[in-house]
Image 1 (cartoon, rainbow, N blue to C red):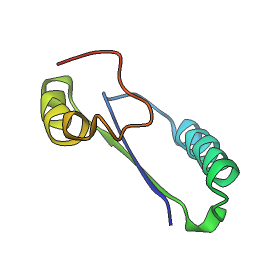
Image 2 (image 1 turned 90 degrees about the vertical axis):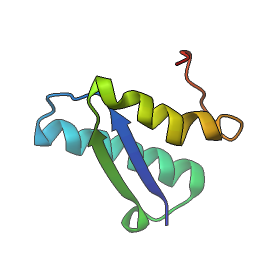
Image 3 (image 1 turned 135 degrees about the horizontal axis):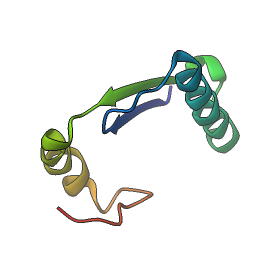
Amino acid sequence: MPHVDIKCFPRELTDEQKSALAADITAAIVRHLQSKEGSISIALNQVEPEAWQQVWNSEIAPQMDELIKKPEYKM
């Protein structure tokens, strides 16, 4: 039951672009984790730049050793 929670700065994405992003992410999860497409959920949460420090402090920095892709920036 994979769940992907994407946090990013606000983007003007159409519903079609959001669907394409979800399809690409879903395909990668199916391919790499052998999950069933119907078991995957994906959230897209847009975070204002001035609130990003909170995301860094609560979700990125504490899990740095477990991240499978680390950011190339520091806060």
